[in-house]
Image (cartoon, rainbow, N blue to C red; front, side):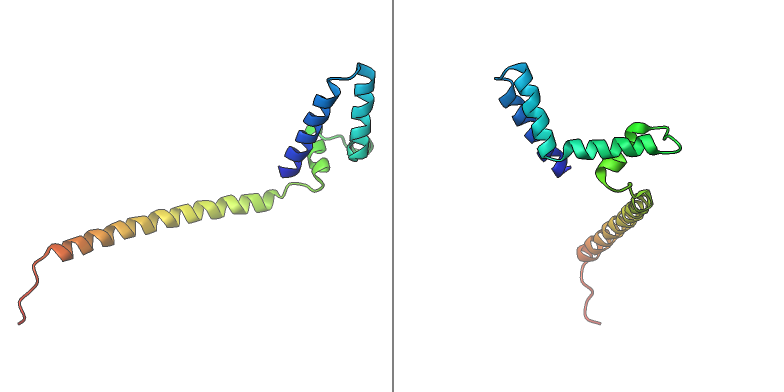
Length: 118
């Protein structure tokens, strides 16, 4: 996400600079910018990979996202994390209920008059 924002900001700044130039020179500067940043190579590599896929993916956009990112999304870990979050939320709720019960018991104990020393 951070790299995406940094890339997006660079593109925005480059586009703002180019808005004051002639259209052809703007396009050329933008192309040089993308080439210098390695964007054109990365896009070309991913598109060639998609072209060479023996079985074309049903969602080519997802293919591009996964391959531009550099590694496939780890759905197993994401699912495990979701399960762990659910378990921790359940345990947290149980502990909050236990705290409430203990606070009520403590308040009741504190409100009872002390027994005489028999």
